[in-house]
Length: 476
Ligand code: AMP
Ligand code: ZN
Image (cartoon, rainbow, N blue to C red; front, side, top):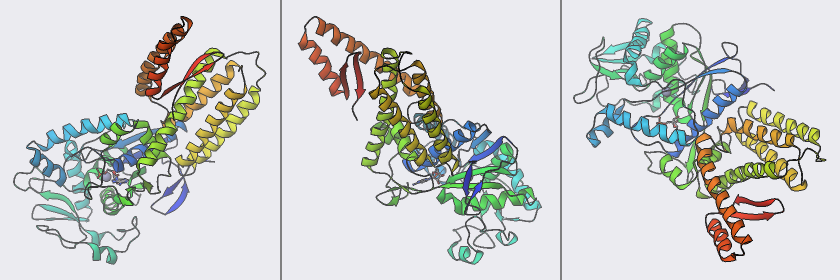
């Protein structure tokens, strides 16, 4: 089965065909860096990271661009409140974004462009739109002329009349039609501004994505993604701007993908509603991989409910995966024996069948919920094989570890390198304590050996004495 994606432009699942064979141009709207991001914002960062990894796994060369919005009303507001410049604020929260995204195992984009570093490109894009007759200058502002763009509304599937009914003119806006939106805003006292052909000012909200997408990926790209709240007006406006600027009939984007909302108490998690938990706070409370596990346990387009129970379940899931890895490691050291009667060809065939199911799930509009289910089928197969066989051939261990590693390179829920190092340090310490306990038992110092067992138990580590030695596990 080849990859199909649900395209919001057609509201249908479509076979994915890239513009250039073997390559994918992929733009995802990034954060406005005025504060820590919340768990709702983390959803697009995580799910589209997984889509990017899947495309790479399938052999595509992916160029993944995710911007930082570092100039807008929220940035200006917050900088004023904190008594710092907008660029100091951006610097600070870009660093915080990277810290949290790294902890969540979100790979850094190939390009992370910032709006304020692309003012010439933004101005150039606006000039192209004006030259093509789709924008007008009004007292230092520049507006997109909606009435000149019959396709407006084609992404959000609404007609101009309905959109018009919901539009309003903000104080100080000098536009011809309530739906027209600002490409450039004339300077206001005390706000950052740049020189432009229309006087000093700053970019409007949407233009940066059009300008930066075109600079790094070209005027016609494969995939553009973001949360479903960005479909209107942000993405509708981006499409209008980009297509009006390029002046060709090529669409700006071939596949539009939007993730559903992360809900808390049945409401969208958002800064404005005040019902948010920052990713930083969530990571302090739950293992970061549990957060990632939780996000991937639902289909990216479905709404997902953030509850303490679901996070605890996800944490238990991560532990189960890690335990399977450590059981495998332990057994590889103690029970690997090529004289085993284990039917390795059957095992290989079973893994291959599961591999096919995993690929089918990911190719079906990257259904990570189903893919995670397959990962647990693999874990079940490994666990039963370990349980039912005293000895296992070396190939069993190689096949099992490779399978887990391959799935984890895409989902990233078992452990990245950083987590592994931390894990390894802790594992080494636990192994030392287990050795000390064995020595104490040999010396009949049962007080000490019990003490070690109890102290590990208090840390959620349980010991199991087997004929091959003592094995440890994290409690679920
Ligand atoms: P912002 O920094 O507000 O532009 O948001 C960054 C990304 O998070 C955008 O793609 C939003 O659509 C997305 N987003 C915001 N709130 C939620 C939520 N509650 N659930 C899922 N995605 C969200
Ligand atoms: Zn954008």
